[in-house]
Image 1 (cartoon, rainbow, N blue to C red):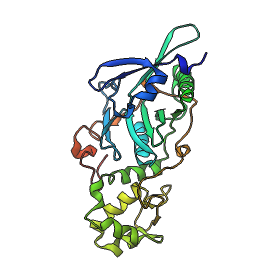
Image 2: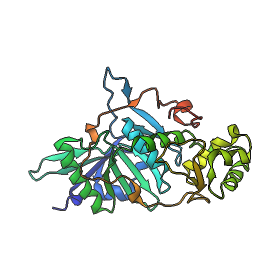
Image 3: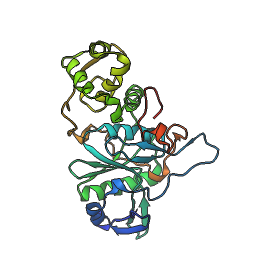
Image 4: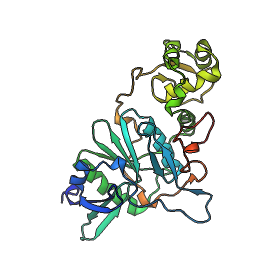
Amino acid sequence: MNIGAGFEAVFLDPVGRAVQQRWANAALAVAFETLDPVSAFPVVPGRRWGPGLWWSAPTGRHVAARSNAMRTQLMALDRDPQVTGLAGRPVRLLWPDRRGQVRSWVPQLFARYADGTGLLADCPGRPGTGGERALQAAQAVVAACADIGWTYRRLAPLDEVPAANLKWLAGYRHPRNQGRPGLMTEVLGAFARPRPLIEGAEAVGDPIEVLPAVFNALWRHTLTTALEMPLHERVIVSPGSLRKGRGAVPSGSLHDDASAGRGEESQGCVPAAGCPASDAVCGGAGARRGETV
């Protein structure tokens, strides 16, 4: 059986009504990146952690997130210049198994790429988790996505240092951190050749004013530095790959492991106070230096 052809998609339309369509038709016509979650991330009583929201820099929209692991993957995708839209849990997939029983899975994350293709993903907190149901669902969703030219991945957790660096830069993702008119041009000129971060910032002016613009440029890839090592004032900053704006990078740069998925079985959580619906913290107005995002 052509698994992709046997799939149905369930999602909420813009006014909140549940709609069910053939998967191939929905993937072609529906802007999943604009939709609300088809089912909410559950809140587990007694836990210190709960679902939260991530403010997406490219779209200015909030994206529902369930776990710290998912929030980290949202940060990575939000920084990917090839990604133009993000959504949490926007679609439920239904399909018949070999015995004719209907199976379902809700991938945790959807990303839209600049070429129009999509990524469905799950974000486990630890490698190898998921269980038999997740393994079987992943195999089916991989086939369904491949049938329409999309991708399903189980995104491996980022290492501690890159994740911490990414979180720091994400605090400067809002355009307001580009500063006064002309400041970003001066910043890019100061790093026209590789030099230590603090030296380039001081060459432009007061580091208190300049550093947010530097970090914003590092987030947007107009400047670059090695994120595998902890960020510090002497880290070498170089001209980036996108000095004139957002462009494309290979989608293979993402952690690629389609062998398992967690979907609705996800464990782990986002700090409820770390990314609430309030724009003041989550980024509707952006996050200031050192804020939790």
